[in-house]
Length: 113
Length: 113
Image (cartoon, rainbow over all chains, first blue to last red; front, side, top):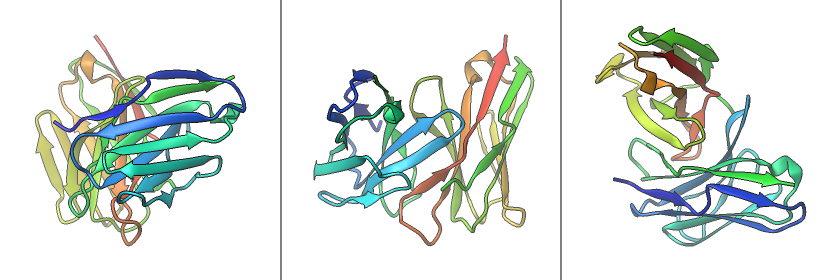
């Protein structure tokens, strides 16, 4: 079974802190994605990556950056956390060129105080 | 950008009843997927239907696709309390970034025992 692991289930940070959300997948997938999920807004794509060291902006990249130094790991970085970044963050991975089925981690619920 | 829109936003039924959720989308697709999300968890892929298919079954799940109306429905038969979750449709980004999916905002299903 595909396993996508997010480093934290719950995280509480203070405004202005630098926050790292880590995601690791064990299926050698080229594609990885970061979403945020808010009530009434559904899933919104923040960043995605098709390969190591590659990254593409999604629909809402402002205030975020990403890092993909190894194929299995995709990190989301909040350079200076703000209260409006309080949300559920979901990481996913997929194998390219097929049916684009995405496999999700359990999510990280981030609260910025 | 959100392409799939689920209807209804929320659905409450009794155990044993059937649950039907609908999804509409705007542009051409290669395939359409349905995902399930238990409260506070990540999404799990349920079923995929290709654009040249009209109906697909998987256990108690039945998915239909009408590309002329740009709509799909997910039917869960003989529902159980364990089916309580949010259900999302997702379409591939036809002609756009490979591997990306566009998720709807979801239908929240509550199955009462």
